[in-house]
Length: 393
Image 1: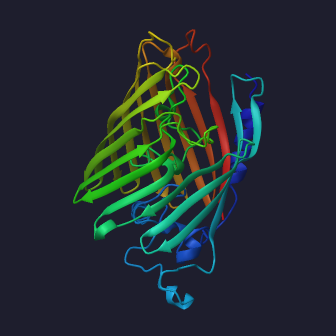
Image 2 (image 1 turned 180 degrees about the horizontal axis):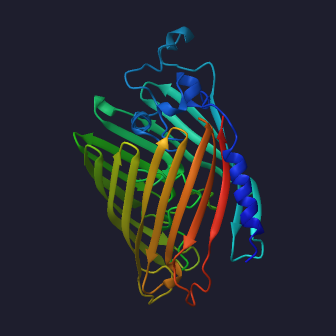
Image 3 (image 1 turned 60 degrees about the vertical axis):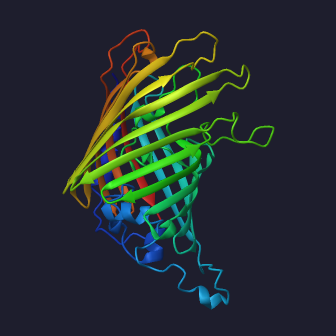
């Protein structure tokens, strides 16, 4: 194996990690608006700490605060417009080595560029969005874009309407610290295009003491463009999902379920989809352990008459260790198994070390190892090493 790309990546990583820099006050988005440092909400961005989770669950508004306190200055008690737009940006740049391709080393910069826009319409009414201006060289468009209605009826009852990820009640992919994704969320057997990622619809969340429940309804076919009829969905049935969970001290447990229907445009044949399974999280001091296991069934992912169902199961386990505000380590394990569809199978281990030069500037070094045995559906073990630079402003 040619080791020069590996040496180059290691050298660049050491260069990143040797930059001397005192932690500074971050200034993107909410930090600008509310006047606090990024560490108020983040256990190393983009991952949220407990306060950040509460802040997000409160519609990105400060508990007990009044967003509309300046409304009277406009002369209309039913109109609140902030003087300045709430804007922020994020850029990710990578240098990657991977086998399995003719190009082993690749400079990927910028790989991702996001523009965040948040609008406060009233107390407990917030619009949150980001525009993915560049990912892998493509303009992707809006991903997260939703209206958040918080504390409906004076209760711990929230409504989220728009575009979002259906797994957000369990684990937010946008907050992960690794380049490596969560594989069980991305499984799509046969010709199915369904993934447990972005959808259009709504989520209703309710908290009653230690018990939290979330229930949602979505189109089920992602967030693509409208069809010739001016519609986003291509079939009448909607998809349903939900989670119920509880916690005590540093431990929280829950169970997630999803039931949906997918239709092939040309044949009209349908694929019934189910996903369900438990999740566990233990966050104690510097250690954050989270894991989830999902069972999945697709009744007809090839959309052919007489096809047999395909079942799979898998999940992930992740341990984050926050050494201090400047250093974080991550160990992530991904597994997907399927007896009838071995091409779906994944068996990956990832280690990541991240250093925060500033609250809003970090570099990381990450390695992913393929534990899957070689077979006709997996003829070669795939490895990758990534060094990255991520900044927000």
